[in-house]
Image (cartoon, rainbow, N blue to C red):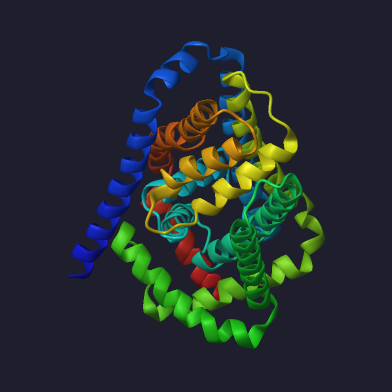
Length: 353
């Protein structure tokens, strides 16, 4: 019954998303064809290039956090893992759980303990949500001064900012409060086991729970001691969001629209809000509708705004998703041999004993 319910919800989400996209495109099909014929290729290429830089920045932020914890992996593998684990959330919308589980699975195959995978994901997630909250706040302020947002839109944005900041506070408290962490870590361990088993058939043995906790504590302690070395991680996270905004900016330039920074950030902020809707994969449909509506309110022609957001969807979501399929195969093929992994695990356990 649970599997059937999940499947039906997922099917409903995809149906709603595709329905919105088809309706939007059908209503403006003639204008979209004309706009596409006049698309400036150089800006389209720059949008694609910015999209590639996004996932490079994601991978480097993961690489830097792991390096701080004394776990070095190949930079190419880090970028590949970041790409695959991010794009899986575009297909299976689960508030990031699916991507986290896949990331933990791939990193563990490269001798990064699950506990440290959790620590790395927590640190990056806090930074990502904090920067996104700042972007949404800035977008809300710009919309307010532009007199293009309704009171309800501003209230919703404010509530979202409060929620995201609360999440950052919660996760930060998890990192720094040992008693609170010990209370929640068992629940998280069970959830992680469940997701990994059902999604990838990888299971952390219950008998190694103590090892998991030790790894988690070790990773957190290293982050505490070397927090001054998080500078590059923060820079990469900020670069991640910067290049994401540039993808949208160059999409507008490709369709011949010169857009100001204030209008761009305001529309981008609204679009990012819609991607948090759990039932819709990657906010498909809702993001295009919301972004187009906001840009239209700010004086941009509806059809041009729609075309730009569709380009943004393809460049930022769909193309990386297709590429990630081949990257995933490459990551599987580049894994260390099983015997080698077993020997290193045995050496690790003997060292502890």
